[in-house]
Image (cartoon, rainbow, N blue to C red; front, side):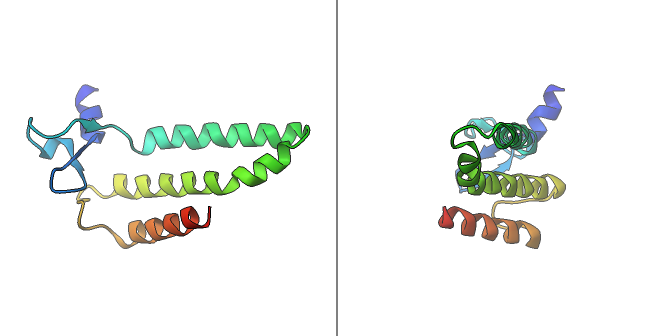
Length: 114
């Protein structure tokens, strides 16, 4: 289990960008253990809260759900990016698949609109 967690962690490479922890030596930066699973947990929790607010509909609940929607959408896009990275075992900081580029572009558009 510990080895599996380590395989899912990324380390910040001094040359710029994340790399798989197993590919780096012991002198590299601390691990960044964020990925598909934590993002899925946040998206699920956020969806549950937004749904509860929409159903409750007291005072300005539905308006708050509407205003929070762009932030939720960008979280979902981040989930898609992490899923794309998890599906590509050869992911490198300077090269990525076309779907990852498309999700990243879409993420940038949504964040700039917010």
